[in-house]
Image 1 (cartoon, rainbow, N blue to C red):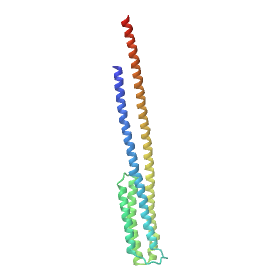
Image 2: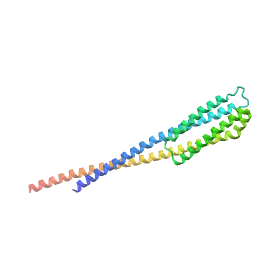
Image 3: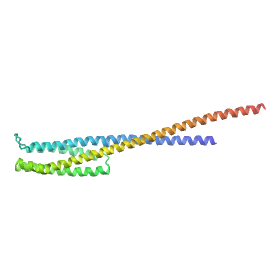
Image 4: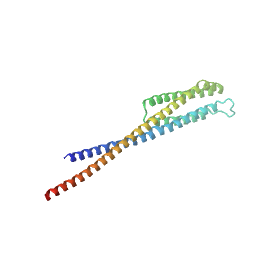
Length: 219
């Protein structure tokens, strides 16, 4: 009965360890999936978002260049800016669909506000240049427009840093899960060795018992 109880305990322990190991593997899989969907993809989207922001700034600077010799098409400029604005809206919407930590939500909300302010500023600059002169539009861009673009760039940089920090946290979590899996594997090996030892003891005990019985019968 003692041996049976020991074997039953070992069987239950092995099943429990197996359950913990399966859970660790699942958690590790979730961590890698999150690394890809919630960190790597958003980081790439932030890069493309920054590209669109820089492209808008370049368009405005080129249009308001006092040395330009080509006639300015303000309607064409608005259309080009609108294309970039749609791209930015799409990227921001996609970013919002990922898992966001508390600090990330706050920074993203600030970014959306600054993007809206930037669009209003762009419209004011174009209106000033169109209804008055390129020089006045350029002056407005230099005094307020550049600051708006710099604020947007600052928020994008902050979000990129958050991606890096969150990614490092996921890596540490994965390392912890791997350590746990190694511990479970070690426990399983130890139980297997213990079972082997018990089997050997049972065999030896059985042989001793048989020898004793044989001697008893001879006597």
